[in-house]
Length: 158
Image (cartoon, rainbow, N blue to C red; front, side, top):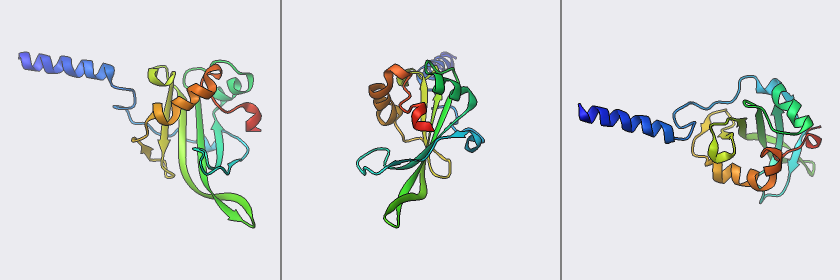
C-alpha cells in the first residue's frame, strides 16, 4: 500500500513539473490556411535559420493586437509556413514546403515567455525533437522582448 501511495505521489509531482506538451498532443490549428496571410517573405541568406520563402498566418484574435501592438491575449496564434527556394529564370521562387511553425500564447509555457513554440513537418506532423527554448525562444527573447516576443511586425505583413 505504501508503494502505491508513493507511486501516486511521484506521478502527481511529475505531472506538475513536466512541460506542457509532454503529455498533450500538439497539432496545427484546423483551417489556419484560411486566416489572414502575409505577403511572401524571401530570405536568401543560406546561413539564416529563416532561409527560404515563408508566409505568416494569423487568426482574428491575434491580428487585432498585431496591428495595434501590446500584449497578446491568451490563445493568440501565429502559423509560419516555410518553403525551399528554387531558381526560376535567375529569380528565387517558391519550391517545396519544408516546415511549418506554430507560436501560440499559452501562459503555462513559463520557460518560453508564455508562448508555445512547435515545429511540424510539411505534412503537419509534430516534430517533438525541437527544443523550443534553444531553437525558438532564445532569438525571440533577444530580438522581441519588448513586443511580447513577436519578432515580425504588421508592416512586414502587408
